[in-house]
Amino acid sequence: GYLADIPARLKEHTPALQNTDVLINYGRELFWSGPVQGVVELTERERCKDEWWNEVVDELRRGQLSESNWQYLHGMPVEGCTLSVEEKESRKRVITDPNDERLQLDRFREAPVIVSNNDARYQINKGRARSHCHANKMPLYWSAAIDTASAAALQAENCDKEAKVRWLQYHDRDTGDLCGMLPLSIGMRVALTDHIDRSPEKLLLRGRTGTVHSWIWDEHAQQPKVVYVKFDNSDNWALDGTPAPGIYPVYPVKREWYLDA
Image (tube, rainbow, N blue to C red; front, side, top):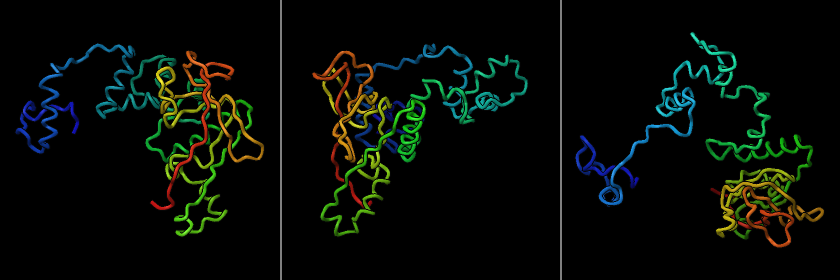
């Protein structure tokens, strides 16, 4: 139960404890009867001063986007519109053409992609790695996972060379959250998927972003020994032997994953 929800006795027109777990309601009583002395409703907008965009956000929040604003967002004709051409064009926020010039702006080319679930993430990352290399005329390298079948896996199914090649194509959600084929390129933007250093001065935690700086990769090896990442907003610390502040080594990791569900 959500701790900050209102206790049953404070809800109007709701019989006390109706359809509410006793322990959950007790926790809410502890929360609302002591630490919380009241609720302040903020009415003045500080984040955005664009009245039209605030109107759109309010409609989206209620699930009631108006027909006219839907048309503005998609760059369609709006009946009765008296806006200038420039102002109307500025309201077109939805990308409808892969050749839209806005996609070439740095803030979009380097921006994180938000997806509804993780299924698309793996393929999007590969596609954006290729785009980065093409745009910057840099070579793209592939770090291949090295899978070793356990005794149980060997008894369960065929784990020959063809199977291992097939495993490299699995989604990372099916292989212990590790990529079978990880694209790498110097200068490529990356983000941590796990914590690697919790020290207060570094705080290299999941989601922290950076840029691939360099690596140590033996010739003919399937993967690098280490990848050096230059993390954003990290000019306040430097490791011994590194050429600039904020550079940190990321090493290959080993995890177990399972062939069945």
